[in-house]
Image (cartoon, rainbow, N blue to C red):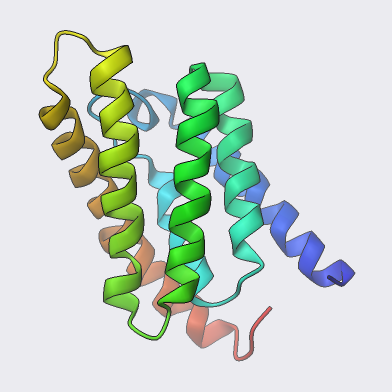
Length: 154
């Protein structure tokens, strides 16, 4: 990795963490829309986004989350980012991975351990819906704008 790629990953991690922290009331909980998850569209442009998203999510979860968020939430973002990059030739399919992975993993542990009064399936649905808004409603337009600005891969 060269300095440009390391810097890009570090900036992405910082932006993810700051967005999550600033928007904490809607970024956490059984009903959430983590706006920073729109950045999971960036692996469509470059694999450098993968570690940046993981580190940003981990930092945000250290400050805001439980041990479940730190471990499983951060790993869900890492897996989502990797699969988004892997399936980048079909952007609509690629962005489905962050939606479904976070719905199942994050919604699952929230329902099982953090929101005992709410059924697990409902936590999965609400997290999945928030993730869909972040990825398709915000991430896809972000991708389209950045694709025009960045003529080549970072």
